Image 1 (cartoon, helix red, strand yellow):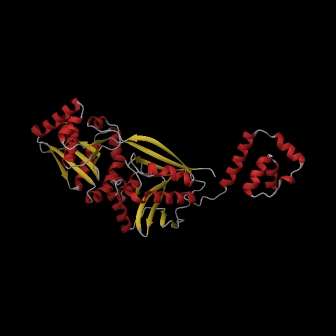
Image 2 (cartoon, rainbow, N blue to C red):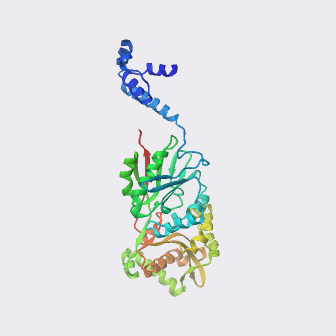
Image 3 (cartoon, rainbow, N blue to C red):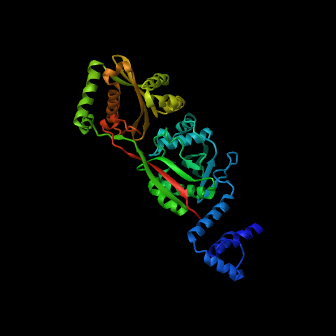
Length: 413
């Protein structure tokens, strides 16, 4: 207590009363001696005073224990009920089969759903990516009905963020559209209540332009005591598919149109080219080998994380029809392999590899062109080329679609 009294005596008058109010010190203005009051008036360097106050306030704040979202993993979170909705936070990936099925259903049925947000991809991606961090798996339900799934990772630097951003092209949170404002309101209320001194920011990665959270969060974040910053981070080109193959060709630049038509015609007339969907998951090994043989950064990435990821998720996603392996045959031999993911909007080209001995047939361009033609015939709306700025994507008519990062920080109280 005596040490605390020394701190009070060294503070200027205005700061003295502010600290007294904030931390419960009971002295009154009239108890100050005239000499102390005169001395305080001499200290008119308020920028210095402000810095002192902030340091003391930060010191007091640091004395709080990290018992919120940064708590040890073995300390469980109790469910929180707000306005008829229940928020759960787990410190590990869920293992209950019934819950995993409901999560998977959301990733299939919701407009924002893709294989990237499925339990198979998220859990396998966590292991394949060798991510340093701790799981904070947040869900919202109403009377047992799953309404929202928000996997998060707590890194050693105080960041709470979407996991696997480097290997998952789209990470829009899975939330039932008609309940999205209410779900975000209770999620932010939960985070505000569980925010502790070790947390720095909460970040959502790889959010698409049309994601509802971009319009919902600004107002709700302000109400919950958070600041929000939106940053455009990269692009994911995609092709808006017309009604016919001829219309698609006419949408390309003249040179690209001529070359694509020529290469496909050559492969089909002289090489008897056929693009066939393969149901045998065991052929994925040959596809991965061809992708690794490309060399360079792309080949290294396949060996580093794509292979373990695809090997882990392929059986489940192929069974659900959400991952497809297409093989281009030329002269009766495999020439190119396409790994495509499926969504409600259409196919998504995840990766491709070709046989170097077949390079004269332009197997990569031919295979992707034939796949686009198949998508048009199936009356799908979009052929998604996913992230990356490879020249072939724009030559084939890909239009850049922005991806955003949303960063929320707790406002000072």
